[in-house]
View 1 (tube, helix red, strand yellow):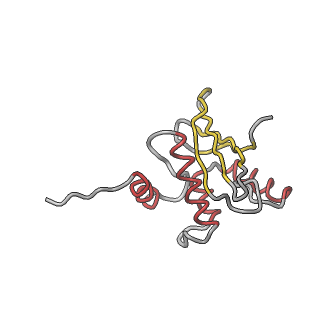
View 2 (cartoon, rainbow, N blue to C red):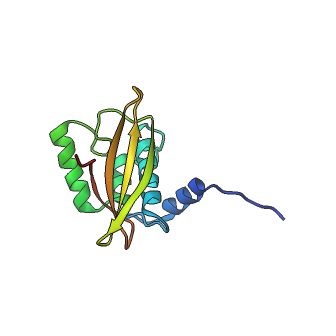
Length: 139
């Protein structure tokens, strides 16, 4: 009998690859959805994911309204609207912040080469885990 061991990342990648165009639905937690999105988006921005470009990944994980808002943000700030910067972070972590009114908040912390970090707050719709909000940490 042959046993195949798959990591969560491999299973997640296989599930998302098989999904039709539109919101990438995930079973599980909001922070897992944000982490899966950010991982795929970052790979696309680094040219490591040739099958999908960054806009296609945004379309799969995010609502149309959020995508339009991110395009507008990018135009106004001359920076990547997901990273909130002009370069790609070295690494990141995602942490659940809380839930209410049908949404969860996930704080994604981006870590930069210079040792700094940036917190970006994601809002995830609980019914389908679609990302429908993204903003800098409240001051």
